Length: 262
Ligand SMILES: [Zn+2]
Image (cartoon, rainbow, N blue to C red; front, side, top):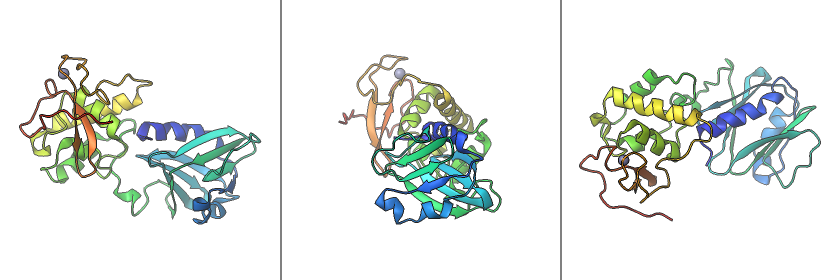
């Protein structure tokens, strides 16, 4: 599942095409009907950057292509002339490189006269990017405080309007590192704890090839205190939360039962 960190890596891979005039082709039928390729074909790519779970490709004259990768989308970059298999959603070609988008994508064109990436509408509602350096913790905390304080912290961390870029795995790891329970209600979480969770999550997402501590480890001993890691579905989307019932604190409401998910 692409998360914020993989989006930033994709943005880095695409940098060699920045400044280049690109020819663009859509081979996947679902991409073809969008008419995106025709709109950006022959334009100069001015900027590629990640905002939360979106990859934004800004072209000259302020045309912005938003690509959200959902579960299976992937941007790869190969040398010009290398064979391209199958029917990718988009192929952007410069003299030396080709960038290929495959699978599960959301593609949307928008116009951004300021070229800041702060588009109106959908993107304008995204929270501060967890991968920004440094992350804007004050702005994130302000958004969490403006949200319904009855919400569980683990659920709120996946709300892209509060903070953009955190997926299921990193919320589990970040909460564990900060020793805060996913089941704590926002009103019971101090600003300091909230900042610690967001800071630890951002740091973990920047660390290369980090070993997972609790995500997917249900029933395994906690690396800190050896109590078995618990797992339970959380929130409207029923994403599985993983946590240590001992060293992450356990609000009265936390599920006692362990769930094994296949
Ligand atoms: Zn523990």
